[in-house]
Image 1 (tube, helix red, strand yellow):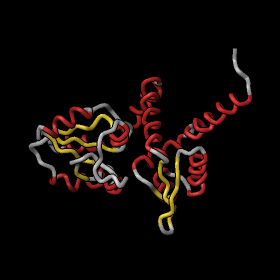
Image 2 (cartoon, rainbow, N blue to C red):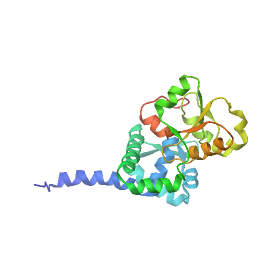
Image 3 (cartoon, helix red, strand yellow):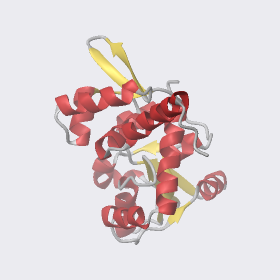
Image 4 (spheres, rainbow, N blue to C red):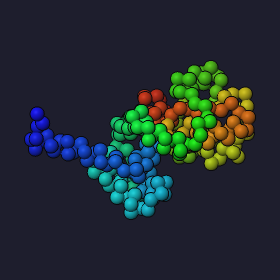
Length: 222
């Protein structure tokens, strides 16, 4: 028999508030960005394709349920995820959605393009690096690399890769990674590198999954 008591209803009401906060495409996109590093509202708005007023309203919803926090840095207020548990929650949401919803998989394929890039998982990446067979390239923006990256990875942002491709050794596998399982940068990087004759692969997920699975980061200010 269902318990209709007010305390029980209030509890599930508060849980629903947290779920509702994540039930918006743009708020999820803001979380995706903040998992990488803290950002001011103007930068977040630009990255998410929002005006500042709308971005601020979305951030307020996320702050009200404790998923996002803010600190003042001089004249700028920087927003960040409230705890590592928020990154873990977001990572699990991505994994469960991909596993349970065919529509998510179809949308990912439309966004990421044809399945023409070869992936390696985290264990295989570490094996190749330890064996001296591969170099790891972080193709996220440089500011995200500085906030935390896979140990030993070099930073060549996707926007710079075509001009800096000569910096990569031709005799090693090149494994590119970016923000997470749905980040397009690594797919684009592998296509470009392969076209230039490199043995190129992408990490099957990204820095989000690396972090939430307990692997160490280099350059992480926390």
